[in-house]
Length: 189
Length: 189
DNA sequence: ATGCTCTATGCAACTCGTTGCATAGAGCAA
DNA sequence: TTGCTCTATGCAACGAGTTGCATAGAGCAT
Image (cartoon, rainbow over all chains, first blue to last red; front, side, top):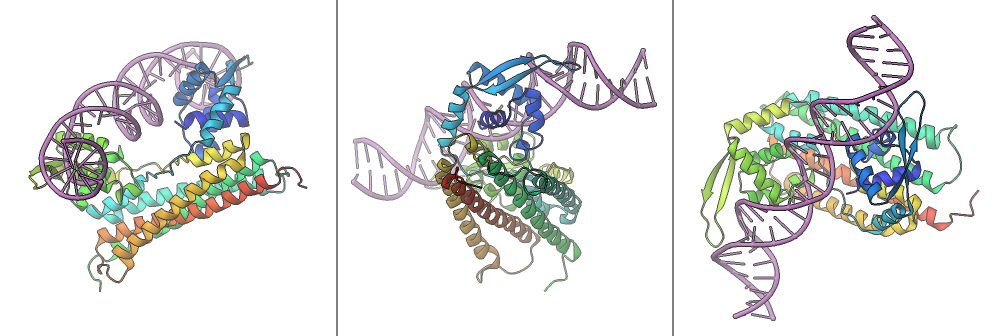
């Protein structure tokens, strides 16, 4: 149940409404934790009932009013408790890997287009991460200083960048393998 | 619902019982798709009802009888259909990344032990993958030849190896960052 | 004898996550 | 004026995944 805690972290970085959170989960937080607006609204409601967050009705002009959530003292304690709990190393769920092994029982070459689509998506993500890094951390216009929060956000982003680079290299390896199998499945030493 | 297809792939590679599948999902398949025995038994039952797998009662000595499942023609077709469908690039869910960003609102240094635990686990996994690669693919005793199935299993394993290496390097980066923040959070330019 | 682990299968209850749909006012374009 | 998109919140139903428990015979150790 880490969505609760991901929301707490995001609200500590900046208070906001359910809608705003769902937008954030499509971008920065979403790079390492996804959630739909449905999940977010439901969890916010539960956390409000548990007293982990405070709500403030914010009237707006030209758009519907919103409920701005912020983390309460109890919420901070819940987060601290979770931070001190050990957690299991992630187990990956890589659908594409299942498809690649499954391709042995179908036509391996038919997977090439699919892998190329994935490669393009990861290439785009990498470009997006690198642009964000320039903008927020390493570029000339980026704020200077050594705020711990910023440094930690940066190291997480570096993880995303490393992940995308590794994935691109692997997908190239996969493509080369699929092409080799498609080329000449028979005449071979 | 890729668990269905992961099971089909595993059964095509080698028929087996629900119990055997759950063991496999702790090892080779489990490196990129996890499942408990509960899930596996339930999905096998559904796939049997849908005619995707055939069952054979196998009496055994010294241990309970088992049901050996194998993929039917309808199951192969279902797998082929899925292989030709496009799928979304994975969205990662990295709990540790949430914790790292959350550490800004607690004590960053308190996370060091946790990150070290993860590092040790990934290091062990890498060693396990490398041993498996030696045994099955690159070592002197490994079977020669260019079976497409083996080549595809190998490229998936190379992906696992690349992932673990990347993760280890990133965790070292994370540790260095956490130690830097713990060292001297005050006296700094 | 007693308890432990391993093989082997399964039910029941629960939480987590997804999908479809609904509401509602503002702004904008054809 | 009709339809589209954006902000903003939410219900209902379903499917995926987890956890706890139960059964049951074989082998092994104390």
